[in-house]
Amino acid sequence: MEKIVEQGLLYDFYGELLTEHQRKIYEDAVYHDLSLSEIAEMQGISRQGVHDLIRRCDRILEDYEEKLHMVRRFYEMKEKIRRVDALAEESSLASEQIRQELKKLAGEMMETLQG
Image (cartoon, rainbow, N blue to C red; front, side, top):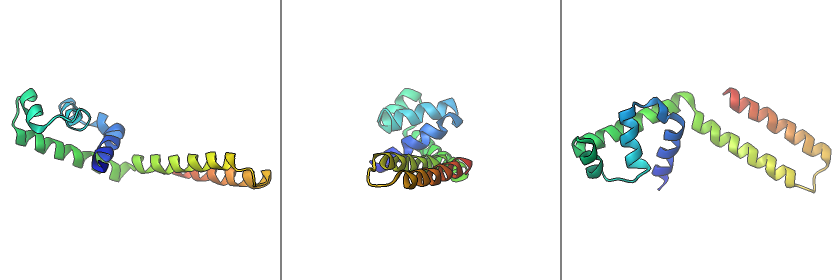
């Protein structure tokens, strides 16, 4: 299951960088959960060809992430937003403590965006 989620996230961030043919086959495999045989029949290529293309797309998407780190930054930003939300709910801290923590988190968010 985790592999499917990872593939989906990588595709969400970098899928537009694949060719139209690669996108179609990758979407059929990952999003529509079609078998290699079903995709091969629809595309008029061999089952092995579909398998190879999906693996190649996986490598391409992983290479983009290694270079651009957009998924990593997304998760870092999501965690910081969660921390801001939790801080907003915190009633035991003084307003000055909250202000300082929010300022610190804002700085961290800017660093994450600047990469």
